[in-house]
Length: 103
Image 1 (cartoon, rainbow, N blue to C red):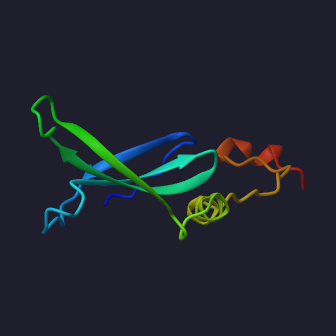
Image 2: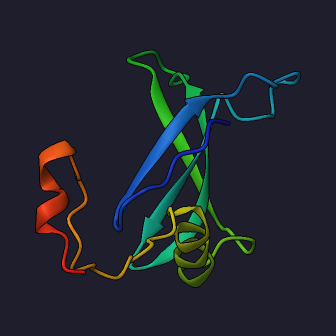
């Protein structure tokens, strides 16, 4: 399943590429509801009496991913910010700028 981070109270489903048996879900995904992470499994069903196909969903808590672990992961993936001290010296020193140097 592709890496995808959901916003709170939303989710995403992807076609299950590894489905080998009818009891395995047709789609799998993740959702976040009120800050809690869930795994989603979805099966395409057709009514026994005929009619349009529909999705049957199952949600299970994702014990491996908590809001805190997602926040920590984002912090680890974020680029480090480097703050360089400001210098009183000009950065672009051309040939005519030698007279402007403070020493």
